[in-house]
Picture 1: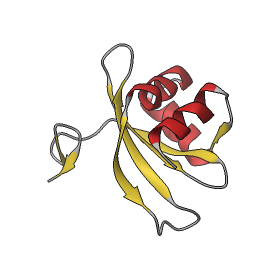
Picture 2 (picture 1 turned 120 degrees about the horizontal axis):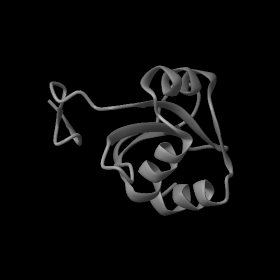
Picture 3 (picture 1 turned 120 degrees about the vertical axis):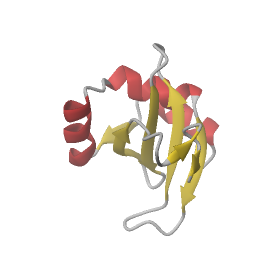
Length: 99
């Protein structure tokens, strides 16, 4: 699945949130709009074809307010938001490359 296909699913609201992602969003004060904005303007920075339940990827983007976010999503059979977090500058170079 390409980033454009993922964006189309987000625009059409054909996605869901895992329980884990909802808990993390509440804990980290991240809104649904921020997640959507991150995916709609972001880029895939890592792919995990052999992830535990289904292939997934990590998307980096900025919210409309300039907040850096990482959103991990499953790719099939439907888009599921797995987790959401602000990248730790100690672990990431420019929020895109692992140290």
